[in-house]
Length: 182
Image 1 (cartoon, one colour):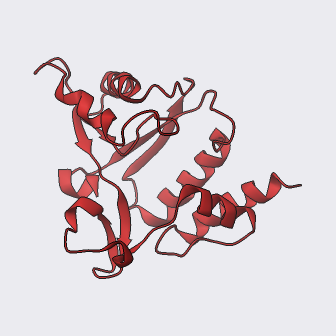
Image 2: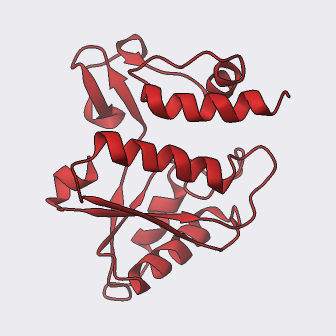
């Protein structure tokens, strides 16, 4: 969505590869899932997958600003900041990591923030949308699953619906979650 809306011809998927909190998907698994998605679903030569060995701090809005500085310094023109960026539990508000950029003085950063909303598959429109852009929808018009439900499905060897996740990516995650029970 961001590539289309910004008219970008490419993107960098720049992952944190350092320490995470228990229960988060480890870097090698995320890397494999992301690379599979790029290989199968992105136009050729439109995405670079890379990362840096920085630990996730779970510092919410302040960490979003740090991520913006990192990405700015590596040459990015935009950073996608979604719901609960760098958050943990319910400590930060859903969109606090976007709102903090409203406080950054004009010209203080040379990177633009793409403020992403909750995304979900719209049964009405037959595509993934940002939910705020579908005001005529009810909750029943979307394919919605909680993170807990998805982890449970994956752990049971059950792929989420294809409207929710790409089957090939879901397989990588199922293999990981099922390996935890071994």
